[in-house]
Length: 351
Image 1 (cartoon, helix red, strand yellow):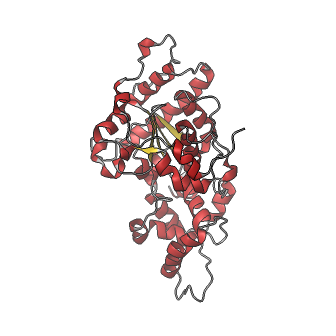
Image 2 (cartoon, rainbow, N blue to C red; image 1 turned 90 degrees about the vertical axis):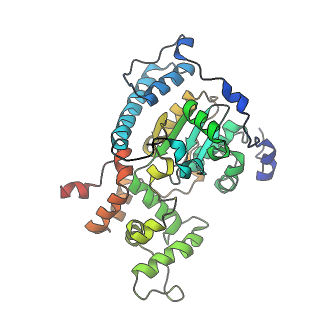
Image 3 (cartoon, rainbow, N blue to C red; image 1 turned 45 degrees about the vertical axis):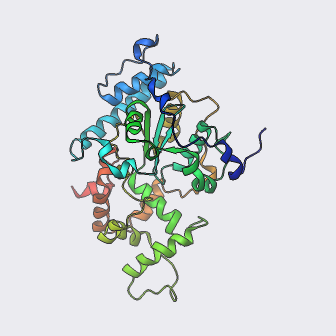
């Protein structure tokens, strides 16, 4: 069994950042070139047709598996289309400089795969998968979470490293995927991991000193870091996030997911959900033709916050006033609606 490489040893496996554009000249196999037909799911959108073509090219043959995932994708893409039609946006993705210069859109040329990562939505796990696909790592657990975060920008190609022409080609021809998460679960995860007084995250103190104390000064009359303990409450953090000051200082760990990956501007082939991540990840890996030895990692090496647990969610969000909850929902409304997440019951009770 191969021993783990250190981060310095792995550097020699890193592919050159400059892409070989000649490799892009061959387009994907067409449906007519394959003798296998995908399941008969009516889905006449560009993303649906694209996914069908990629399934035909892959070796997926489990009809029941395909039917279930295609229905799931059709529902998610239909919801995306409804919401995106109501949002004004530029006509071309390449007119969005905050996308083409973003450092969270990753590219794998061998499998023709693009992945947009979002913090607190298993982004480290997906980076570990990309490292295996790139040949930098032998397994998804080869490197620690800290090493992956520190080196992923050097070890994995990003869309921003390509020319506009290459970006356009990649976005039109590669399998593109992103994952979303219930906005309130993701926000709570960010708080518990980075800002909670009880956080087990090794570098939480840096976040608490930079952001947590600022919130305490804002919402606690007379609070002083030199005298008072750090005991930031989730309700104070939530109020800060949806406030004008918080909006102006939004951090990527709780920034709106629609702005992180721009699903109205990129026609993602597959829309995954954190809540069904193992099933969706398996589907993606099969669609792109990844080796059977590549599997989505378990969360054992992450910093679990239990923030998706319904009881944990309820106990934290019930500390918010009705106005705070409503303001927070309005801040994340596009995330809730576009990705098909239901509003909190308290907001439904108001109508």
